[in-house]
Length: 369
Image (cartoon, rainbow, N blue to C red; front, side, top):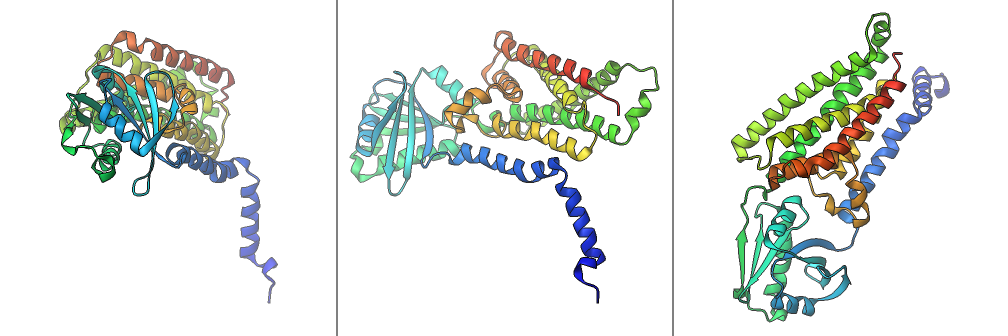
């Protein structure tokens, strides 16, 4: 009877295992990268032992609410004159961190649209009114936390002095927050897979090698890929926006021309990144890893599905530097805040410059085989 070391299946298993672990890319994308993603998500949702809610107070005299917080919590920090943080400890509700900021009504609505605020609280003649999107689970939870404290017997607060006014304004709903993010994410994903993976796959199949013998400029080949992707992105975005308008009554409140220019700048930025990623890679497995390395962090960090203000405050300034964040914030401001040419100058210039730099470097490094 043959020993297990001489068995054919064992030898094949051993050979494939050794070939696998000899590829550092496979180990990184299969083992280390998922750990990094889990750490990122953990920082977004579990970085603190307490729940955190951002509440905007429109009026200055919030006497009843101040009295309530004095009963249940202690002032934990003070960041300037307009922001106060209060930590409330409660056996039933757990530890909750409320960050109160003072602002006017228009600025408060903008904060709500951007995901920077969960609830707006106004106080008129001693009656506190809570304004939030009833379909937003984060806003609902923020109100429920406050409501539970208000109804507590220890608060001695008149519950009839509070009121709820659901906000159904255009641009405040979660779907208004989501659609611009999906447009930006679809643009990035289409370009990264449509350009990067196409180039890497053709190189691995030796198809690019054959193109060297033809009188074809490298730049024309790359420009052709870019123009096709731009056309496809326009079609895909129009289909998404049509159904968003038809089903959810989504409207673009800002300047259409500014949206088109920003959209083209986003295409240019990610085309440059895609060409740079695919400039040298010869294996589709490695190329897939690099594409995911570009896409996944930005998909999680850039505020596509949830506000990036859920992440620790020290990371927000870095997150805003990501190209997908600039594109998403710009598109969202046009959709929901009525932004025009002046508001999109900065993200358009940044995205265009990034795309040109990456495109030039990618062309210099590009190899056919």
